[in-house]
Amino acid sequence: MSTRIVIELRADVVPKTAENFRVLCTGERGFGYRGSNIFKIVPNWYIKGGDYINNDGSGNESIYDEKLFPNENYILKHDRPGNERRTYHPTNIFGSRQMHHPRSIYPINIRMRDFFTGVVSMIHGGDYTSGSQFCIYLSKAEWLNNVQVVVGHVIDGWNVVKELGTFDSLENGSPESVVKIFECGQLS
Image (cartoon, rainbow, N blue to C red):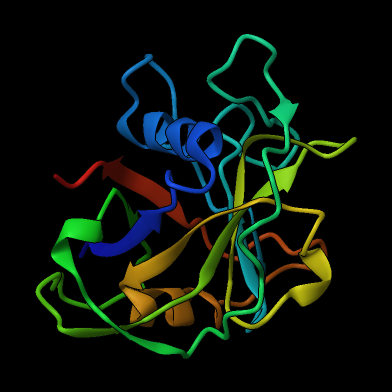
């Protein structure tokens, strides 16, 4: 059964970073997140994905010619707790993610009026640059302010994020079971 995580991208604050994430979601350049794995889960802390090249955290390329691009800014902060309640505004949906795992049993429902948020930031590729890798945080990560660029927040599917955050991991953080992004794109 498929489940969906919807992410609101903040193109108003980080336009280049948001466009990179959006294009990797849609796959409109012939490559992107579709079919890639969630390669690291630290239970109740964060979920890492976005290595569409090697699926193990070693690949990290953006849509831009330079592959890694300078971190855009640090205006958005890693200070939202994963259980903060907000109001859902359908006009704010900019991008979406859909993930599947055999243990997931959640129905798709994007017509909620209330939802929970989680910070989504780009994992830097060294020297304060961004590529394709992203992290969804299940708790505050304020020490990452001015280190990783926040690109958006989970606005629907928080129950899926929380479930993924409970999966067992190997010593290196890799999930014991394959967690794959089967489909992703942009909601209009």
